[in-house]
Image 1 (cartoon, rainbow over the protein chains, first blue to last red):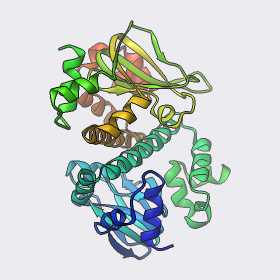
Image 2 (cartoon, rainbow over the protein chains, first blue to last red; image 1 turned 90 degrees about the vertical axis):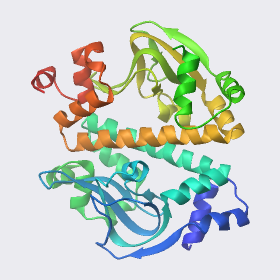
Image 3 (cartoon, rainbow over the protein chains, first blue to last red; image 1 turned 30 degrees about the horizontal axis):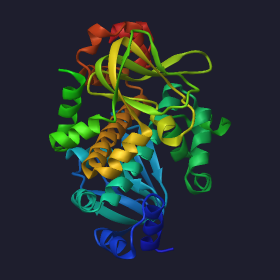
Image 4 (tube, helix red, strand yellow; image 1 turned 180 degrees about the vertical axis):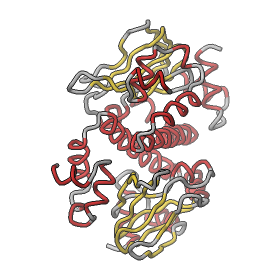
Length: 187
Length: 187
């Protein structure tokens, strides 16, 4: 499935658009290709786009003062990635986004998302529900961190991304769970 | 300021509605009064409403298997509270919401929110941005938990809710920060 078909199928799970309207929506996205290890967003950048993943896998991560890495999200096909705090507020990025594997994405600018939401009520509905789902997923992840339950986080991760275990190096899975590699191997 | 005025001012920060349209929107909200300690949502409940806080203060919290309490959110006037995961999915509540102080809220049902979003494009825009802000706030909170930085969480809390320190018992602030009362008194 190419990027256009994947995006159309993804949007159509939430709203119904005619082919003509979808083509118009699509005309605001730009296909981009990145290679494994390549950076899409660095902390300190001005962030102007969000990315719909068509192929490959991205990671969104934070590096603290002790140069320790915390992974916020893995983004596989059909997921969206960005530093949304920076994108929405106009402040500089606090997190990094790079590629765990060669990746194809469809980039949408902040301005074009707002334009599409203004012009097409269905797109405003689509983006509202996309964020609703992201909000709920982040809250679930926060609860399992507060509860300090690494086993639960591990099970949630495998449910959310069943194909991830073979795709992603173990030290990155540990950085997502917030545990050491030793703890991960016990889980 | 009464509940109607507070809600109108709150919505008008994001979108412009005529007085007639606002009156129509308002007709979908029901004013409710709760006393200190009263429960609004219990884990296991079917959740059908979200609540705009007009007066008082609510807490949203999770109780784990060891009967330890984790506070997800304090909701002061102009904040919204619910178990959004349960509200959006139709599953049973996992968290509790109760009143730290006598509270007045405006309750909106899931169905009426979707109806307003369908009928009034501006309201879909309003609710999209409300969730965008909630998503970003939750992600910030997740990052400071991953980073295990209680001091940063404490400073974020005081920035977000400057009036909270005098309003909320210290053991609840500790449960929000995920630290012991002893650690809180050192911060």
